[in-house]
Image (tube, rainbow, N blue to C red; front, side, top):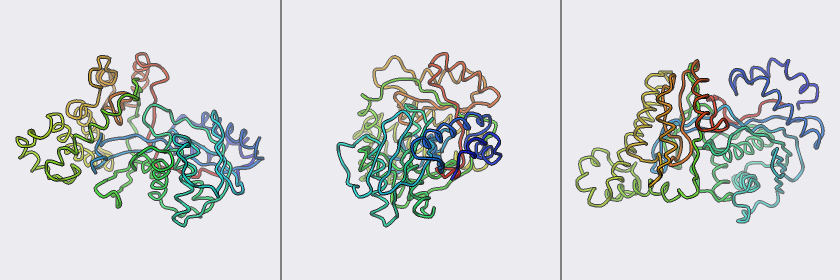
Length: 420
């Protein structure tokens, strides 16, 4: 385990410097030295000297806007912000103390789901342990102190980051590191669905567990087609802007996208759009419009085109073809805006996402921009020339606030043990 001398000498450790470059990118060394020292100090003050370190990243949706719920394709990625944990063994229970939050404690002989724990971190720990135990995987006790710079409210999946972190600690400490990445993602999804009370898909957890850019085909939920691709666009930075807006009253509008796509599928006697032949769809629009709205037809058109764009994006990332990648991202953004229609809520005249997108297009150095995630309120994602990034960030912060614009990078390593 890392000891006091190791931590004191962290700023002179070449191996740590290489790890920082791999996980966080350039110019992050001093910041990460401070983070790792702080968490070690807090952990050792309570649990004694020594500890192993783990890192679990956030994630972004690269391409594939509102496709997964109709068994489509997505491109997602783990990113260079993370939750880190300092961990030591502990008998018969798991204790997680996240800086700034109340401690979480789960006894390993008490793993039943509890409705009163819905929405709480303790449910995620209990749920992961339950999944492991039911499938014959080993669990054991540990104490962890964590800190996170995975920003909330920007759609980068802080809860999934935490779930997969717990999985990896159990994997390394009690299963010899042999549990595959997809199993860890499924365990995390189970915890969030059954114990946390959130009916999420598998996209977030998969991106975080796999690392790099992940192509996921949801045609068969039981047998996902997954390909992990390294990110090689060194001349481009990724900037997320949280434009503001309240998601609490938007549930019906999110649900309407899925329902309208499925409504089109039902015209063909199918449950999901993935089961509908695209040629047959276009040949029968005159009949389809008798059963569904024009908006539903437009959203189905987006779906069919977006799946193709995911394929094109995946190929462009694999071949490091920046021009084709940015073209596909811009096309995706235009389609979400015009056909999917999830860039602002019905009746909204503030329109923060359209403002952010169109302002971005006016700023030199922006190569591609689109709505990020569910839409209606919240975040946009921009791909910006690295040499012109600072000007873009300054301009966006002047409009949307200095705490709402985040520069991130794709990291090619998913949730992992960093060192001990």
